Structure formats: structure tokens, C-alpha cells
Image 1 (tube, protein in one colour):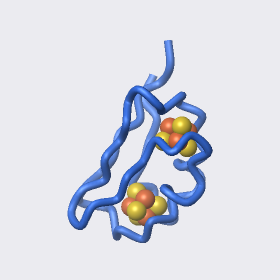
Image 2 (tube, rainbow, N blue to C red):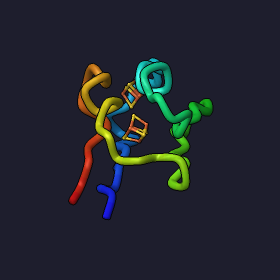
Image 3 (cartoon, rainbow, N blue to C red):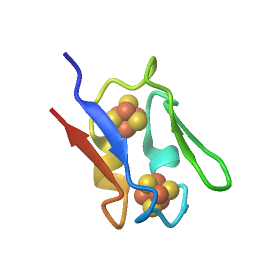
Image 4 (cartoon, protein in one colour):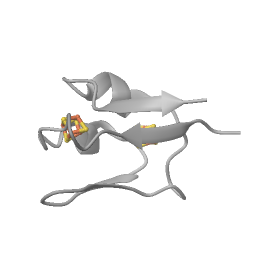
Length: 60
Ligand code: SF4
Ligand code: SF4
């Protein structure tokens, strides 16, 4: 089963870096919300590495 991507609203600075690096177009940045499209996310973790302040984590 794919890992669950969890976003921290309190940490996020809304830079859009994660959206830019996701190869599956699974992230949409809104003004105060990062939308994770669970149907597209494959749990690869590329966005986790791409986030400068660790506002995204993968949970088992
Ligand atoms: S874990 Fe991979 S597929 Fe899911 S949002 Fe991040 S980069 Fe995209
Ligand atoms: S890369 Fe990190 S800080 Fe930037 S929008 Fe994504 S979750 Fe927020």
C-alpha cells in the first residue's frame, strides 16, 4: 500500500516547490491550502525532498 502524504499547514510557506517537482501532478497550491490529490499521488516522496522546510512527510 502506498504511503500517505501528510502536509503541515503550520509549517508551509506556500513556495510552490513541491508542486513544481511532483511528476504526477498530484499537488495543487491554493492561497491557504495545499491540495493533495490522493488518486494521483503514488507516495514517491519527491515532494518531501523538495520542500525546504519539511512541511511534507510520508507516513507508513
Ligand atoms: S509523494 Fe510523489 S506523487 Fe505524491 S505528491 Fe509527492 S511527488 Fe507527487
Ligand atoms: S514545498 Fe513545502 S513549503 Fe513549499 S508549498 Fe510545498 S509544502 Fe509548502
